Length: 351
Image (cartoon, rainbow, N blue to C red; front, side, top):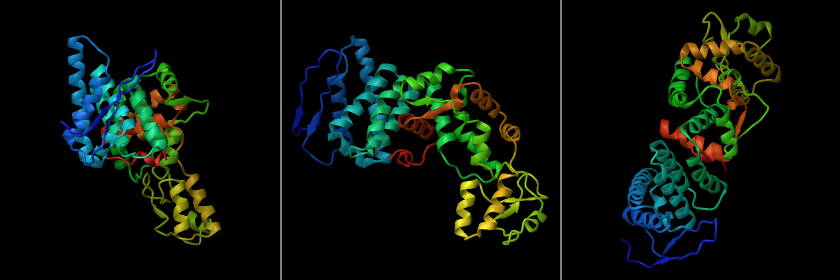
């Protein structure tokens, strides 16, 4: 236990308000054990008074999530231990403990731990810190169905993934789609209304068809290719340049443009300083030999048959109309990270 000066703030709460008793500690270099003591003190001083049995269960759960968080913090961001002195961080810590103490939900526990690790990296008040604080309050209001929906919408609509063959696409489905499918439901309008209610997303009138998402992001995979003669027929001066043309993935007797999507192709143009005429002609070849929407769907299902389930759910619910808020992105990101392990930093999407 810490013997240094600890100032406990006794507060009186007005009706319908919540106050936190934060500990101000004038030391540096906090240890794991010291931070754990602080966290459990905050919980004991703030959690509602319950019956003996309920209070004992709540304390055991709070201790459990505290230890799991600190273990993960030590692995991923040990400097975050210093934030135990910060009142705002203590409030977020307490919300994490309180949510798990009330539910005992293991999936929620893992999600909250990941959100708190992300929160530990924010030492200054900024938009990311504010969003993560709100995500910690919002996540306990969601079921596994909501969390799975956020994860899939996030990964499909907001994450760029470098995939260059169908084997890679299959692995992508395995890692980023399959873990969440069992939690999704067909025709579940209420799920997305609740996500809107909790501030995780908004349901618009624009339809983001799943076939179009795959076609736009992975255009190079869903391409019929063209005959080699087309290059000369369209007066492409760089000829059969291997930087730009490769054997078609879907028909080895033909060629296709060597780019995952239009954005990657334009970057390639800039790198090799391609002339305006060649750019226009190569881009035309790229765009005009794409699979149809039905062909994209059929190909995805042929790679992993369970993708039929996702196509059915996506097209039969407001999932195809949802745009995520910053809070929805943060929770979706944490849920993806919980299943796939190391993932790109949240600051790529929220900064």
